[in-house]
Figure: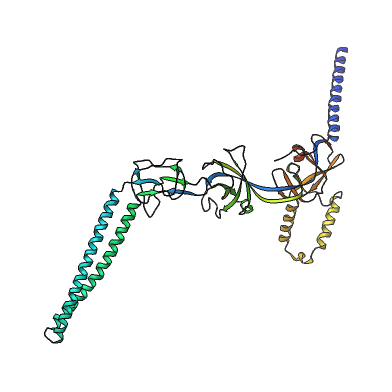
Length: 446
C-alpha cells in the first residue's frame, strides 16, 4: 500500500512540473509575440532625376540590304565573289550561261530584219498599185474600161495600203521582241547595285538558278552596307504606345560586353508581327533604332535596347523596394459597426434625391462596384514615426531601374522604410513597432 501511494505521488509531481513548463512556454511565446518588433532599414525621401525606359531585345541588322536574285534561269558559269568580300557598285557578281538567250536574240534579230524587208516589199507594192490606179482612172473616165475592172484595181490599191500598215506593225513587234531578247541576254550578267559586303552566298559555281519576272527567283546572295547599322527590336503592345520617333536609346550588344552604344528610334511598325494570325505568342511590334557609333558589327548579333520614353527632373522619388500594396484603411477608425452604419445612412440621405427612384437592381450593382473599388489594394509606403511605422498611401508616376516618382502622398525629407523585403512585403502593418538596423540609405542602383 505505501508503495502505490509513493508511485501516485510521483506521477502527480511529474504532471505538475510538465504543466508548469508548458504554461511557461506558452506565456513566454505570448509575451514575445506581444513585444515583437520588426528590424528594418530606413532612408529619406529625396529629389532626383528619373528616366523611364522600355527594355527590348532584338538583332543588329544593316540599314541597307539587297538580295540578289536572277530574273532569268540557267547555270552559273562565273561566280567571282566570296562571302565577306567587299564589292563596288557595278562589280560582276555572277554570270549565267547565255547560250539559250543568245539564240533567242539571234532569232529575234533575224525576225526583225525579215519584217523590215516585208515593209519594203509592201511599200513597193503600194507604189505600184497607186500607179496602176492612176492610169486606169483616166481610162475609166473615158469609158474605155468597165466599172467592175476599175473597182478591182481600186480595191487592190487599198489592200496594198493595208499591207503597208500591217508591215509597219510587224516591224514594231519584231523590234520589241528583239529588245526583250537582248534584255534577257543582258540579265545573264549580274553586277552589284551598291557598294557593300557579300553577307550571304547561297549558290555555288555550276548550280542552276531559277528566275522569272513575275516572282522572286533563287536567292543567290545578299549585299549589305555594314557602315550603317540598326537594331531591330520587338516591343510589346503595352509599351509600344510609349515609343516615338527620335527617342534616344542605350544599346548593349552581346559581342561587345564592355562597350555601350547609343541610338535613335527611326521607324515604328504600324502592325504587329503576328497580326491576323492564329499564333498564341505575345503581340509584338518591330522598332528600328539607328546605331550612332561604328564598330565591327555583324548582321544577326544579339542586342538589348533601353529606349528612354519619359524623363522627369528633380522630382520626389523613393526606392522601388520601399513601395508595396496593402488593403485601404477604413474611412472612420475607432467607431463601432453601428456608428458606421448610421453614418452611411446619413450619407445616403444626403445624396441626390433622384437616386431614390432608381431600381433596386441598379442600386445593388452600384453598391457592389463601390465595395469592390473600396477593397482594391493601394500602393503604400511606411513612414517612420518614432519606434513605429505609419502606413501612407502614395500616387506613383514614372519609374526607372531603381526608383519610383511620387506624385502625391509624401514630402521631401520624410523618413521611410526602404528594407528589408520580408518586412515591407508582409510583416509591417500600420502602427507596428520597428527597430532600425542595416544601412540607412538605399544601395546605389544602375
